[in-house]
Length: 305
Image 1 (cartoon, rainbow, N blue to C red):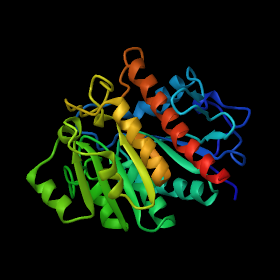
Image 2: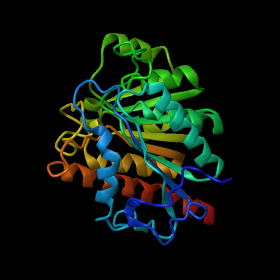
Image 3: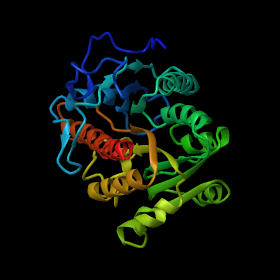
């Protein structure tokens, strides 16, 4: 089916891919979504898709840890969806869902680059319609389980709550370190399992315990505030004592081996001043590249076996 959102193209492609980036041939579709309409503290995440993609031009597609390169898979960067802060979050969610549905219909692997965390509602809803009993692996400092935040049910602080309300999914949340008794109660009464950051840092949980909470098909959503601020200082709501880079990579490696990751997003990176945030911009681009290499190394291996 013709995808009206594919690029023709006037901007940069992720990793600079052009020769094998035709939408019809690509296995991976990158969807940039620029929106921060419900952000309530630090701003700048609406700028992140552009700065992350620009930074990706400095990366090699080969990952030294996975010993895998993306250059033969085909990656198409779709037209960036740019939304004013005045646009209602529900409308942004609906558009993100519409485009993700199209990506899935075309048998592409969706990667959404945000933007605030509310956009994940749409991409997860689309994936949940295609994959029954979908698990969501949420790497995040916050549960995002508020029914509404500042009277907005589609807030970035309500992402998980809205997904649980509208889909047949369950959540595994990794790196949580900002929560209330009310949110703990919501988690205990929904399909939500929380692994707190302090317990992970103190090695009270094995990765195998996390794997046991996940169904076969997994959607991965990464809020960069899950990481320690020393790694991602540019985010709207940073929290100290966060996850280390290698722990997150090791977790994704094991999930990729034992489960089927069917899509992922990276959200909440802020780029208020590209001249001062280039470290975080580059790290976000590197993380997307590394996660894709890890996931697709396993997919290629399984397809050839």
